[in-house]
Amino acid sequence: MKHSFKQRIIYADTDAEGVVYYANYLKFFERGRMEYLRKAGVSVKKLKEEKGMVFAISKVECDYKAPALLDDEITVETEIADKTAATIVFRQEVLREDRLLVSARITACVIRLKDFRPMKIPEGLF
Image 1 (cartoon, rainbow, N blue to C red):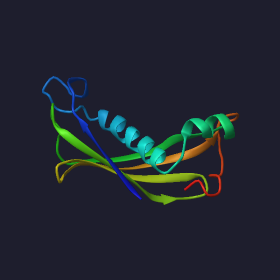
Image 2: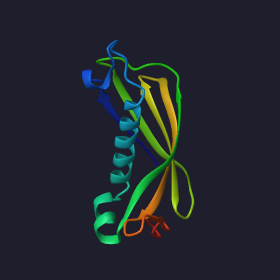
Image 3: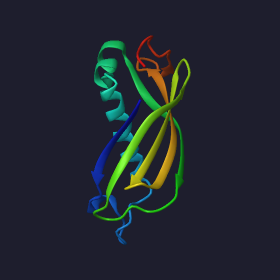
């Protein structure tokens, strides 16, 4: 499954030159992952409250190809690239129209809140 959503670049996303500050792409990717999970029927709030588990980012790889600018409409695309017993690797992209601006592979580890140790992803979650 691939999920995408559109977002307008606002002043708070940019630096003094009107270019999206590089770290802000991580926020766009976070929103993309949350929306992906929501569309897949996964409630991170319920997982935390009922199973005592959360997702923690353990690795980020980003390739910056071109900048997004103030007032651009971007599309954030998210899909699962790989998973293991306790991790999910997301492939994500930010595009303006059909032009790739930033791509990323982001690894999320499932951890148990009571001791912050990795835990197995519950059967049937994905």
